[in-house]
Length: 569
Image 1: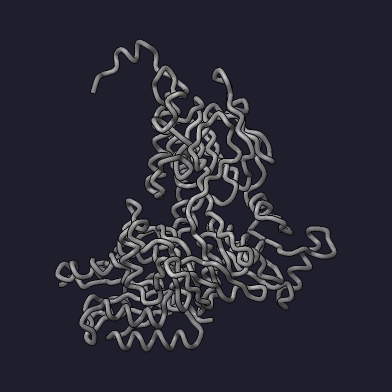
Image 2 (image 1 turned 90 degrees about the horizontal axis):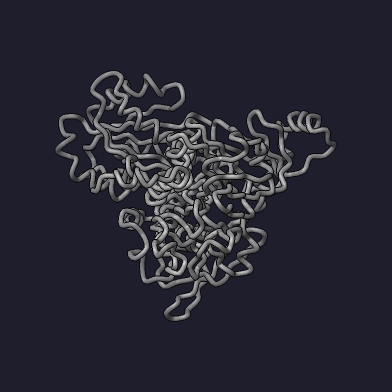
């Protein structure tokens, strides 16, 4: 396969763009130039038809054969939907063209609006380009750089779950059939290494790790991250964080940076439910957006830098609160963790659809959440997304890069009550996505793989059958808290109560717990598992960071003299 192409489009400045890109990208990308929308479209179609990839369109803001560059992007998207799209406006009209172009960017018509480089070492420009190329690389079906090999004769639920875990951990992977001719010597070496005559599937081989014949995702997590080690500080940590989503990661970063000993226990992949989001565009500080996986891995690396310990793949099965300032005890099937304080940030799971024929096809076309691996395998097929929240919107937009059509099914009358406006705007612009309000999925099936779903209009009861290769279920939140002790107050939906939401009869001296404190001293809750939380990534991050001063206050309570001398604000 040829190198992926970058198509540079400008009537008068294509040579300027080519010179700038040649110095950095010529080794790894096929750099092509075009002087018009039509010429770029023809180049893209030629590359697609021979089975190769277009990674990026970079265009001037004015083209000779279209009234608006927005129309050019529309035409190019019909040819190559997965390519990233950038406007690099010439400095003579960058400001003049900005108002119209920024409106288009807000609707998802393209990914970045940049000033054409005016000289060498324009690092701000190239930072944007490399970010977009990195995001593109993470979405192609067969990545060039492979960190983990998955070898299996079938696309079963376990194999899909393992690949999705690897994707969420930021580990690019590929799937091979064990009968592949070029693998035979390689597999013979693995049999010798493991001391077995026959290998069991799926087999996972990650870089610099012992190959694992996986029976669960946890087997892979342990192979990659290792088993828990003994803890320092006499076996007691200052803060144990249960759940490695945005709230838990924020608490880890801020807690460890302020001198607390912190351990994060995550049953699945770092990032939690947010880690499955293909693109989060409304997170502060990322104007071009960032995938949930990349945001989570950056936060994890930040926390590691400050000394946080991560135990990934170890599920907490019980929490035994300490009394009289004694440490709290967290039980896992990999060992016990004692902690002076605990943050519960284990998040939520998607609610089950409850349709038996479809539950039987989970991993074979039916997916809970926006499974990144499954999305890449939907190229050319029709898919259905069920849900009306931001996660569903992000999933639909990501799937539209691959699938022929994406249908969003929602029980409500529309998306306006539950989805951010920027996502609604992008969905409305994307010609591959349609929305079916007042609709639910009631049946579906296929021969070992999802082939069809049955949809019911909730107002008329009318049922229709629709072809679908993929069904992505993002059905709302069910808290993961069956492991919590009865001393922690919860609402009728089992979300953890904190602060003034705690029933008054459980207040101490008629004073409610602090905002993120639970009914057990030294135990806090943040993120989606907390009753009344906003269910947004930024809000969860803020809550996680806000827990840290409460932890400090609990570990070193102020004396009466300090309270008396504190200034009144």
